[in-house]
Length: 399
Image: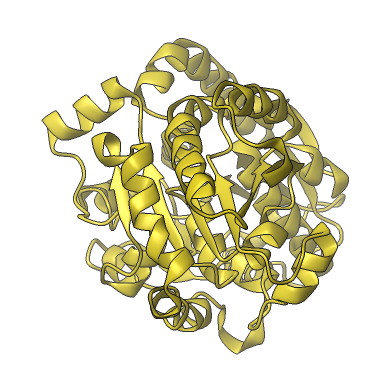
C-alpha cells in the first residue's frame, strides 16, 4: 500500500511519526532515523522516543520511559495510565496526519494505536515483529488490522505472516551488524584488564529491576558454587544501566562472594561476552548477543508468578523453546532452565561442562556462525538501511 504523493510532500517536508518503547526501541529508532534522514532529508519526525532519537532531531512528544513496562502483571498495574496516554497520542496523530506512523516494538501499546490510525485511513508500519513463533499464530491475523507492513528481525517470521495475508519483510537484526564474524577475545580481555589465560564467567541477570530481583539470587548462588570449586575462575557482571549497579553490589555482599574474583562493570556487555569462556544469562536479547559473541551459555529465566500462572492457565505459549539461539537453530542448542529449574545448584551443574570440557563449549560455538549469517540483511545492507528502504516503499515522494 502506498501513501498518496500529494499528501506525502508538503512544502516543509513529510511528517513521519515513530512510537518507540524501552531503551531497545530508542536504539532501533535512532539508527532508523539516521537511515531515513539520509534518504528523506526534508522529512520531519515526531512521536515517542529517547535520547538517541532526540539526537537525530526527532520532536519527542513523550519520553520513551513512559512505555517501559513488562509482563502481564506489570502491565495490568499501569494499564489505566497507558490507555490515557494512548488516547491522547491517537488524538494528536489524527490531528497531525503523518504520512506514516511507525510503531517500534512495544506491541501491547503500539498495535492498538496503529489499529486506530489505520481505521482512520492513516498508514502504519510495525518495526520488530511480536513473537508470533512463540505465541498463538492468531496474533499474526490481528496484526493485519494494525499495520500495513511489518518489519521482521528474524528470517522465519515473514512466512508465518504470509499465511495470514500480512505484508511482512525480513530486514535483518541490528545485532548482526554490531558483532564481527570473528570476535576478538584477546582484545576484549585486554580492554577489560583481564589475564588472557584465566577462566572467565559472565553473569547477565537482565536489564529490568523485576528481572534482577528474580534472577540475580540464583545466578549469584551458581557463581558462588563455581568460584568455590575453581580457584582460578573470575566472574564479571555488566550492569545494564547505572541504576542497577547498587542493587547488584548489595546482592554480592549478601552472598559473601570473594571481591577479588568478581567485578561489576558499567555496561560493556558485548566486550564481557566476547572475553568470557561461558555465561549465565537471562532469556531474551542477551542470549542472542552471547551467540554473536561466540560465548557458550546457559539460559535461566523466571517471570512474575502471576504472569507465569496466566500464561500456563490460558495456554498462550506455543513454543517449547524460550531462548533465541534455540528458536533460530530449531533445536536444543543451549541449555534452558526456566522458573523452578532456575536455581543456583542446577545452574552451576549445567555451567560446569562449559567451563571444564572444551568439547561441550565447542559444540555450542560451532553453531553460532550460521545463526549470525541468517540474521544479516540481504545485499550487505545494515538492518537500519534495509528497514528504511522497506518503509520508504510505503511512501511515494515523486520529484
